[in-house]
Length: 164
Image (tube, rainbow, N blue to C red):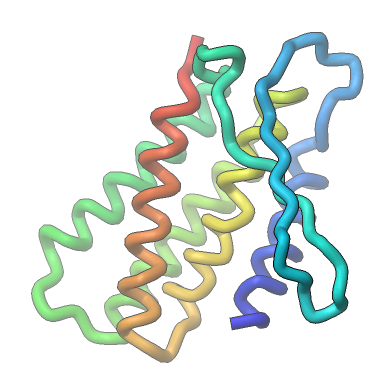
């Protein structure tokens, strides 16, 4: 399981760099919550986790390409559920490949900046980890769990982002 989190952390870092990072000059205000883990990690240090939140009660701005990419992810998962009865591990891995290609498009076309962009990354880091497990996993149950987690993250995206 640590490998999955390590991969997710690496992918999150790559995503942050490839999307252009945050814009320090952005003036938009955010309601971000910080949560400190009371249970020490393997290194006996507390970890800080920034939570996804709304922008003072409003949705964050998404660029059109990111919003469209998230719709494609949602539709791909829906179609898999509708079109695939009793899926095999190979079916899940093929789904993961399709999802990974959509993720690549989202990343390469991302033009978001500032706090909107930072909030997006709170979702995308774990999502990339989910897709990696679906694509490369060797366990159907793990693939199912990661599909469910990915579906929940996509729903969170639409609850927290809109195109204006």
